[in-house]
Length: 284
Image (cartoon, rainbow, N blue to C red; front, side, top):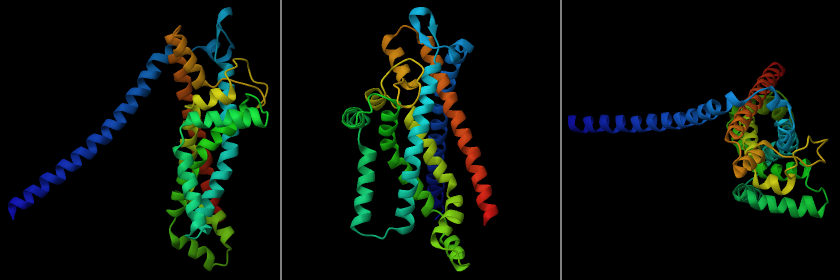
């Protein structure tokens, strides 16, 4: 009996050690990558690098057009994908019943999530750029990227909605609220953390995409005049800098700016979600 107890303790200790080791390894790798990029890039970031245009032949190597193009791409893509993804997730979690229709929707979502980004790029070029004549523009790139992130938003939001306790819904309905009011006033504010997670994951997918963006958004280095103009995102700019191999310092600096930009967007999303959660709680 004592022997079995020692074996159980040893097995539990080994499993716990492996779990903690895997967690520390994951966090350590993340911190190492972030620290390396910031350590290599921050010393090469100055005000002209942030505010100048990119004209290497004239000695101007700023990334202002790339920052503006990236912000356009993120904003328009989220504006298209978030409402579609959240509404689809609400239907799947709150209204849909098990059956062929639900199976088709889930199959379509999983299929969209598994398609390589280069296929999205080719489709975006054939349909958005050529067929409906949007040309290579930020709008065409945003529509293409929106198709890529809709499955992320749908799956993550649906899981967040299903995690809301059933008693919350029953209590609201028992007080006389309609199903739509219950979803709007009770379910969504409670699940806002999961919805926020889907937005953060989507932003990461958008800013890291290159293949689909090159085919649809182009790589113009001028400051875009609107979403109908072509542009070059920061990730595409990083690709061209690495391809040319002329300035490793610029590559590190642009990567550091990209990390900081994503961090700021995530902080803004957290603040917005916190305010929405407070308003939802006061409304209840």
